[in-house]
Length: 616
Image (cartoon, rainbow, N blue to C red; front, side, top):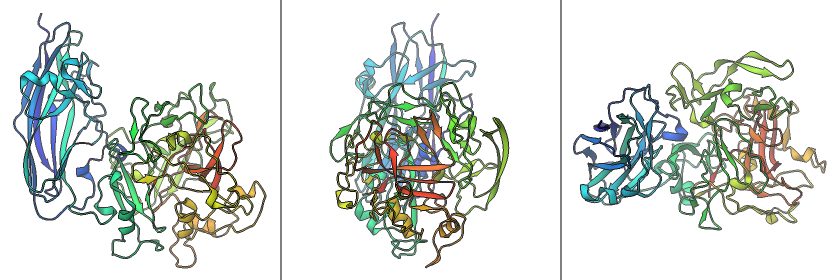
């Protein structure tokens, strides 16, 4: 009996917006199963979907030669076969264009179109010759003038899950032909049938010139000059002028994820969305695309990527674990109640701020968080101009031991009816400090820096994109006040008129907090009352323009993802003056729902906290 597997490739050209943004969608076979597109901003924003300053004049077009069909009759020891799809790109733009490729599905496997079967053809590993493709895997190759006799000598790649640059040209006028070869090796263990996946290839014109943030496409294109040259939408200087901020989504070239960034009133360009880079112990980060300054490359030794909370058996301040707990958006940015959950066998701590226990997901515990990887959610909601709304949910009450209903009225970051959300509020990933600084802070101490900011030591590297870095911090441990460093959260908040606690104290408890609520100006700002002076101090840290999530932390001591919607903790690059224990402390930034701000709080390196980068 002949075993037969079929692939079919249809093409459809789509014009997205201006003439310089072109997209082709490839449909491998006619899909008969529901297509679940990953729409989250942190995952699949393609260059053609970003707000981009497009050069005037010139044109850009892209075309596929024909529809093709690939039929494979496997042998027991595997059968390799490939098909070539010729792409033609014509450009008259003076700076050329860039091509991108990604899958629209949540997987880059070819999935059986018979929904009663769960078989699939998995994506190949990186850089595999066609002749060496593992059985029942597939991949693509962008080749120069191949012929069918040499398809097995081409090097194949997995189709990226997110928008990924596959080629770029800077030629002013060109008509280029590319060969997109799709190859697979199939054996008789795979059931006969049709296997499919949605692919998109897009082209975008390169900017003619870069004068500021709004001209960029990639995070890695940021420089100090670009940030300095960025002005308000009306052409005025942004520094020192709250209300003049400019914002743009930029793509991280390492994985295609897009992030909101803004030039804020302190004069720095900040990420206004948490980093969501998945670290991979099989993949090196390099100085070409990552903020590595003391070394050429870095490979994490420990990774955790799971929506179900997992704690490794061996974890300390020298490990570099990170956690991806899923694509969740905090729907109720200023709700002052923690997401709680019941204790478990693996996490018996009764602290009411323990939000998710080992073996559980955020979705099981926290109604305030929306899983936007499901149900076609799209990142098109603008919370800055949206009216306040009402949100109803349930919460575990650690006192009564029961789930209880609640209703919140206030700013929202989602629109349930239209299934849209504001990507500023994606919680991102959580990193140990050693992971956040790419292992460049091991045994780093700020010796004799208790009263001297010049002696503070900052880790030289980070996992921020190239051109970006972690904020600095640090405080005078005699006065209790943070050092006024230009690239710190402290300086940022001073710019927005958050009042400074000037109480001089050597009280070890008091100096941890920069400002504690005593019913005065801080609370008024937190509650939405404008500040003094120029009258435009911003409302709440969690709202425009800073969008600082109270996204919680991964706490290894309580065995939980802790304090979701109750506290926000962010890493800095600055080491503490003393090495004291296996969980040594570094300076971090924290604020919480009981109206406390700690811009230079000591934070255990062993925890998992989110990251906000700012431009170097």
